[in-house]
Length: 151
Image 1 (cartoon, one colour):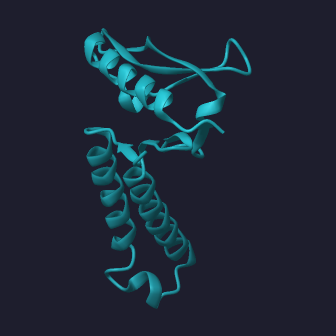
Image 2 (cartoon, helix red, strand yellow; image 1 turned 180 degrees about the horizontal axis):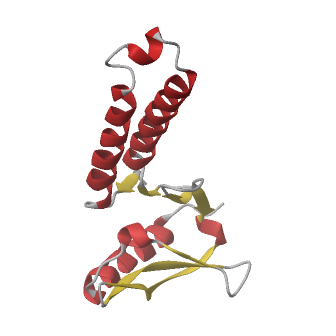
């Protein structure tokens, strides 16, 4: 099975633009040269924090998405660690409404884990406002789960 990476189309460019502006804000503390020349430690620390957090934000935004491979499903989120779920731990893949955005329901594949009947992992990066679109992705995930080597 080849590795499949699915990324959110709108969220990544928006986050990259925001964190690029954040990084540029950090560089403005160093451009006049007054902060470094006068040894304004507050300005130096603030500029360094803005620069590093901006670059880290761009890096995290570019990694967003869902990675599907022979081992399982890895969900890469912006604000937390990656969540890896092996195929053997997935009992089923279902389509479910996971959220309401702008008054419209958001449908996405949901991984139901075999170890706990209540444990579910919604794949919001694969979400769609169209139930049929989300169901197509569910069918694709179900095929990949069937074809995955059992371990």
